[in-house]
Amino acid sequence: MSLPNQKRYWGTQRVARVCQVSPATVANWIDQGLLKGHKTPTGRRRVEADDLKAFLRAHDMAVPQDLTNGNGHATVVVVDDDPGYLKALVLTIERSDLDVEVVEAATGVDALLEIGRVQPTLIVLDYSLPDLNAPEVIRRLLEPGRQLAVEVIVVTGGMPERAAVELREMGVKTIVNKVEGMQAVVDAMQQALKRRKVA
Image 1 (cartoon, one colour):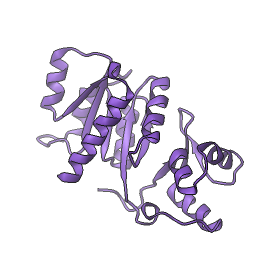
Image 2 (cartoon, rainbow, N blue to C red; image 1 turned 45 degrees about the vertical axis):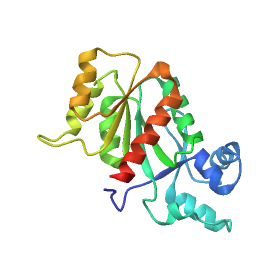
Image 3 (cartoon, rainbow, N blue to C red; image 1 turned 45 degrees about the horizontal axis):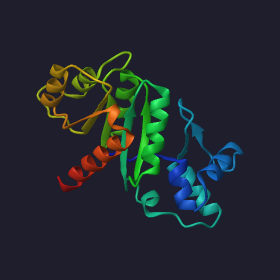
């Protein structure tokens, strides 16, 4: 469940679609201070939903429904310690048909903080992180005797078979190997979001 005072952020691709301009134009607006925004640790520009709403109204532009109805779309926390891979994956997600907000984290501890903050619909989690691996992150998300309340997709460059078994026992339905490409991750996300709608 989303918290009523939870801050929601939009990436330049989504803002560009709403304003019918290019993502580069949105980036310029942010850099010039015309549109209030900030940069994530991986250099992605983000705009808070309320600031975007104010900007659209100030420029007599239509405010889309998912800006006005608070929680109109899913939030995904994407966790990977490789900045190049993380940046490319976030860009692939933003260019896809998935209408999601992306929140990034580079470590297991950061992931747990972001998950607690945004209460995501979906988590895309790298198996090997510098501080905690995927099972350790999931273990901390699981309260004693509880099922995992949010679906987790684990992305890996390779893991022992017993680790895959352990993840499935914890409730992970999907494990994607990085060699399958980023589109495979996006496809897995699409399936997970469909399952959630049906549930």
